Amino acid sequence: MTFEEQCNSAAANFLQTAVLVDDQAEFGVSAPLAPASEGDEFIEPDELAGAVAAISQPAQAIRDRLDAGAITQGFAEKGLICSVLKPKSSASITVEVLRLAPKSDIIVLDWQMGSVDNGDIALGLIHNVLEMDRRGGGRLRLFAIYTGVRDLTAVSTRISEELPSLTSSTNQFEFYNAYATAKVVVLGKGIPADHEAGQGDRCTEEDGLAERLISEFARFSGGILRNATLASMGHLRSNTHRLLARLNGDLDGPVVTHFALLNNSADAQQYIADLILQEIEAQVPLEEIVAKYAGPDSIKKRIKQLFADGGRSRIVLDSENATMHDLPEASAMALVDGSVEALKLHIEDFAEALGKKAKDIAGQFGPDSLPRRLYGVLGDDLPDGVRKHEDFAIASTIRLTNVEAQNFRDRKHPTIRLGSIIHDADGYHICLTPVCDSVRLDGDKAQFLFGRLGEDEKKFNVIVDDGGVRKRLLIDRKNVFVKTLELIPSADHTVRVERKLFDYLVPVYSPDGTKEFVRWVAEMKPMQAQRVVGSVTSNLSRIGLDEFEWLRQLGVNWSG
Picture: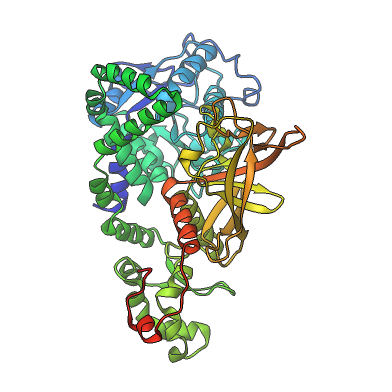
């Protein structure tokens, strides 16, 4: 299985639903050629003013009728459900599509609906769904314009003009949003002869549409981590009944007992939330899925795909001058099994590129240097490679950030607890107060312990995205600066972050009764936060004493 096939497999496991909108959809009808002037009783669009520009002259359509039966059958064969909507007015179809959109992974739209439409309805629907997704915090979604218009370039041109939030890739018939979570593709109905010369690879007949859309979805959603994630979510979707069988209605009584005995609704709710998460984890065979989609074989397939697509793998020789050197495919793949040995084979080439002797640089390619040399392993230049590695570091250690403010629309604002990162006049600080001491707070103030995080570009152990600005931070366990802040508990007996205009703020107690604030920046994942505390406390609890030097040097280190 190639990497592309792995992407298709993961996408197929995840995808479940699609909605198709076409005013010429018919069941059991082949797709005859029809002149563009043959319109039906479609009510012309009148509800999308402001979403797109005024209606322009329609492009010439060669193939109008759509065999809805062949399409739904094709989706069924791939294990997907496809709803076919035949609109009678722009207003009604907008309501129906927006109602279905939250549960639809793929939205397929005809370009011309009615005799004078030139994509205005389709553009309006894409605009409205993207806006709905944006307000909801984002959504992985594929839009497909499936049209009988002969010249598909006319369609892609209007999309680029009317939807400025989308940018075109190297392929003029594919568009993406800023976060690469939404993709719009232009596909032609029928066979290559139905469209202009050179557009044959964009053509798909009805019975092959499902397979083509799965492939299009996989091409923008695929990746080592995304494949594993999509496969995991797909497995969970397919096995939700197992989860519900374990957490069934017979357990309602014990839940009531738990609330009654604990006498603390917040703690009881957290217990239920933790229980559900643990059951979800138990139902997903993560080890097997990761081995299949993110194991060493998959990583090598990803590198092989890079070279097959004309890309190259590069190693950083001199980070100050951004000097990089190409690696052959075999060496790039060998990095997965042992990077030091793979690079030793090219010391002579590296020396020549740097204008030095091999013996002078051989020691510079040891294990300690590798983290700064692998930024271009998948073809990235130095700045992009550094940024992507920082992105992974943030994903690995940070649970919530103020950049993800839109995620708090459907959930409570975070509370101050172990791992919370704040910023005040003294800089960045991380909360060291245990979780158990961050709840059930009584009184008008509560003391929280914080350790300072210094900003350091070269020496750091935490990376955060503070309002879109990347920060490298260091908590120096051997030189810890700690301070106590008196914070104001909220009505739920926790210190909850508040929203003030564009900032998320933490209320600080002031003796004169005024309400002061410090900025909330992020919250670390629990295990990473616990490691910070362990590092700090272990250093503070060290014992220094004089001893027999022979025993000190030859004996086993007390700290392990």
